[in-house]
Length: 196
Image (cartoon, rainbow, N blue to C red):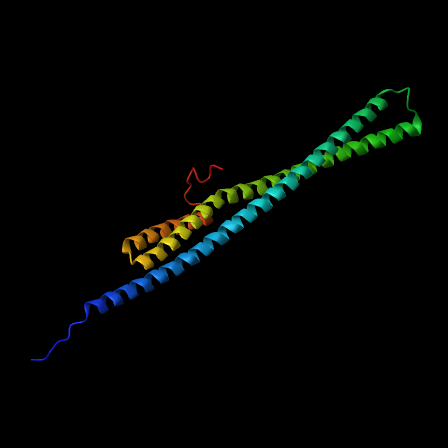
């Protein structure tokens, strides 16, 4: 009868541990890729939020300058109209000059009113972009934290050959990846994430 050589138990355990280590290392690399994407999304959301806030502030400042100029022109027009209402003070060419100037102020007042109406939607659009990116940012922040913890726990699972620790890291990584994806899409709104 032929002899059958049974594999050494220690060799089987080493091979199993080596396979486990490779799989965890590959998973950790995937976690790192997901972390990089979450970090990029968070960085872009913050940058867009700040740029949109700056654009909104600029537009509202421009709007306010138009309002001030509109009121100045209205005040000047009313003052000239008051002077024109008194027939004894202005005569002939001087009266025509004041009437033309009053018309010019009235036209400028109208132009400022039209200009500010064009500016307001731009400012509100910039605020909407700011608000959307402000809602995105916390999802990326929490995603980054979970993915960083997942990488650490995956490393610990390699050192300790602990499968439960690896599964824990996998749950953290999946949660972080889902939060990151939600940061891009805002499909699910978590109220306490968007509170600030």
